[in-house]
Length: 464
Image (tube, rainbow, N blue to C red; front, side):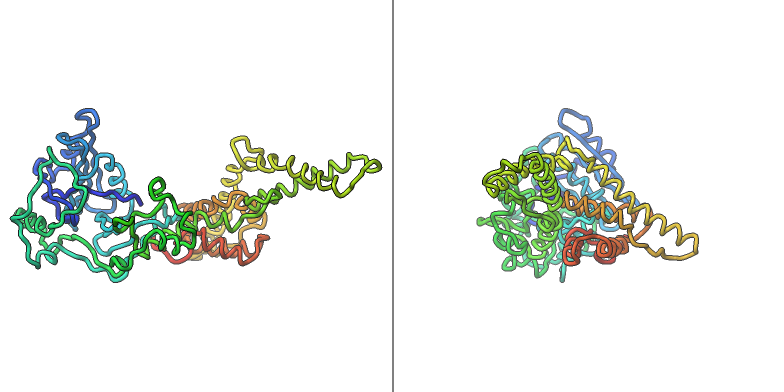
């Protein structure tokens, strides 16, 4: 989940973001999404606008427009029929990212603390663990979350006279949160129009034990939770997009909640774990996929035997030295043919075609089980074991492309769900059973591989 950081609240928002200034949004026609879109769409170079209905809502919509008077920024408006209006000012380059999250992200519409999100009923942690069976991030509720409303904050003393409402033309995003933000919130409350959403329904923030500053972890803590060396974390400056968005930034660097760190570690190991699990050591003492090592060893033996057959054994001297040289020569000659079997643009084997074939073979067997259940009048199909040949091809593939393991398992679960209405959990159980029955991998490796690479919904029940 990409986290878009707004720079200001619109004055007519119902759900202010803490720490951000309020900006006069009176020029925005907030009751007309098409008019918001027209404000910027094709109105000049670099200007744009967009509006879309909200999926699964009766009358909800989103609308965006570049601000013509200050085109470095864009307005973003989320109108929900039940939960009211959100008006944000964002950097113009973030328009597409926020649009995607609001319309397609399945991650609510209010974001706080580095991507914690609210969907109208509950708070969830930032989306990090991809559930490929549903093509979205797994939604993970925050434990003991407490929703903070504008009424909660305004129950304490404030001084609206010390606040201001900014104007868009000269606006520049502040570098730090406003220190007296509650005063600005009080001024916003005073400027609310008659009939606006009640303050006790205006969501401002959340509090939760996991977000207490003393419980946040730094890079060293993130690495420890992930079980990897700190030097193996993405670079703090150049690889930060590969780290979770921090819950806060301090002078000593970013800080994350422990549950966010655990989710990131889960996704990291889902991606990288199969490579480590299914790796082997080559004759050159390097680490490569287990399947590539096996291919190399097999080709080395073939070449070595061929070299020895052509040698004149009667004239052979220093046999042990010659054999060692033959082994080394054979290993060198065998390496690139072994690589070329399955890797690179000039691969000798259509590895991508094999992936598609394996997936379709698994789905074909599942489709037959579903059809049989329909013929026999059964409410639930009984899934038969995946055929031995298909299991062998599946294992052959992932041993040579271990980094693709999560992808191929996820695609099988996705197609089985969308095409055959089979739950990812049932398909995950079938994959586990079939690999145990017919693959040559040991049971411990199979369980570890599936625990790493199956989609979350294939490991436990998931509502669609």
